[in-house]
Image (tube, rainbow, N blue to C red; front, side):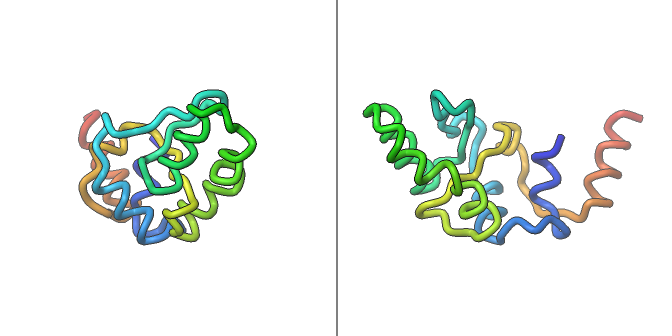
Length: 109
């Protein structure tokens, strides 16, 4: 549920991160083994994934430890990650929180 609220006008996530969320499909997410995290395949996310596959967990940490803030909030997708639910693949529009809540209420009514 929280993932949907990342792509709202009120959320402090960067515009670059919100656009990445709009463009990703659910099957594109990368699972970062050992850190229990999934990331949109940003440049930083792909690099972290590759380093983990190579067993270079310390180097991957550069992209993961501060990567969430760097990618999601600062919008630097070259070194940052965007760790959210694969349900993001269904998000196709930036809405207000009110619109999202109304959408949820209407779906369950």
